[in-house]
Amino acid sequence: MHIVIIGGGFAGINLAKELTDQKGIEVTLVDKNNYNFFPPLIYQVATAFLEPSSISYPFRKFFAGKKNLQFRLGELQKVVPSENKIILNNGELHYDQLVFATGAETSYFGMENVKKNAIPMKTLNDAIEMRNALLKNLEKAAICKDIRKRRTLLTIVIAGGGPTGVEVSGMFAEMRKNILLKEYPELDTSVSNVYLVDGGDALLSPMSKESQQDTLNALTKLGVVVKLNTRVVDYKDDTVFFADGNTIQTKNLIWAAGVSAREFEGIPAESYGRGKRMATDAFNKVNGTENIYAIGDTSIQTNDPDFPGGHPQVAQVAIQQGINLAKNFKLMVQNKPLNPFKYNDKGSMAIIGKNKAVVDLPKPKMHFKGVFAWMIWLFIHLISLITYRNRLQTFYNWMIAYFSKDQSLRMIIRPEKRTKADA
Ligand SMILES: Cc1cc2nc3c(=O)[nH]c(=O)nc-3n(C[C@H](O)[C@H](O)[C@H](O)COP(=O)(O)OP(=O)(O)OC[C@H]3O[C@@H](n4cnc5c(N)ncnc54)[C@H](O)[C@@H]3O)c2cc1C
Image 1 (cartoon, rainbow, N blue to C red):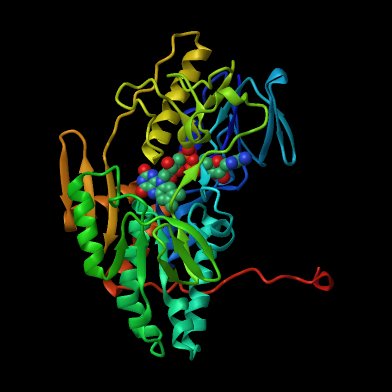
Image 2: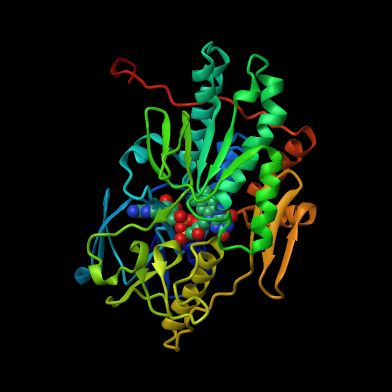
């Protein structure tokens, strides 16, 4: 059986890993990047606290020596189900079973100016671009004599009060306190504001009321201005416009406000559910197809009575669906009955700053905050990284950052455009 997996994020890589050395199963994993990365920590790359290599790993190195696993660099363009074939940007592939594990992409809710001008927070490329943009704006502010322009350069607005928005704003507030004063003596930090805005009436909306309140208190104490019930409607001429008519002048609007899945040619329109996610049965088979599956953020399953609106788009769902589908493929090869997917909710957490985090556990229902929650967050994120090498590298960087309250990765590194004459 030849299984083609599109996407090597949490869902795809766990599916592939579980199928290693399985007799009768050949796997080809296709990804548009040649590496797997860990989205929950990209904000630390974006704020220059971690190197990109600490949270990413090349697929080919990961698959080396695993005889039934192959990697193919390519971007999926189209599926031809009648021929069991997919079309990539660089060729085509045949499959017996096809698995979509393509995740989600940033959604700007149709706001073209926001898409054009804001800084997204979804991929490793986004994180590197954000790091460069922010560092360049700091350098511009350092030589800017006009106080209004300087304020615009130093003001950061983060849209989206989920874990990413909370984590990024906490990080910026701490950087302002520990780094700006020291390294940019020419800057007046009183003109640098960090705003966290959200259209809803609470931060971390799926978490407990205690976590929401603790987070709001901790961010406010760090100097972050939190604006709830505040929806961004436009961003142009360095001005963020809100639905209530207010505006904020900034060169730095960070967009962590929404994701949506992507439709692919060849998949019937009626197979898509809410948020363009592929609707599946309890075995992750896409409705209306024979041998096409979808797992992780790109899929939606509404037959779990505990999650009638579909599972949340989080790492644990993607990991557990990848593992369950792998088990089912093994059962399929042996002609045995398959197991439906059942999500085991292990809780949720967010880090706010040094020694500050919130954790909610579902069973038994518990809430932690402060240093203990912060240690749980660090431990869980560390062990979730894909290899020992990533774990060691990240642990080392965190230790330096913890004791020195700083990092030394703030280099503006970007590819130089080569002219034709150089080539
Ligand atoms: C900034 C950020 C922070 C987050 N923090 C947390 C957190 O703290 N806790 C948590 O549980 N969840 C968090 N999440 C959500 C979590 O990362 C996702 O739920 C999880 O990554 C979903 O896994 P996935 O495998 O479905 O998709 P992804 O991990 O997004 O992987 C999709 C893969 O598909 C590839 N791909 C996409 N389209 C194509 C194509 N056309 N052709 C080929 N390859 C393609 C991509 O390159 C990628 O490798 C966060 C997400 C973001 C963006």
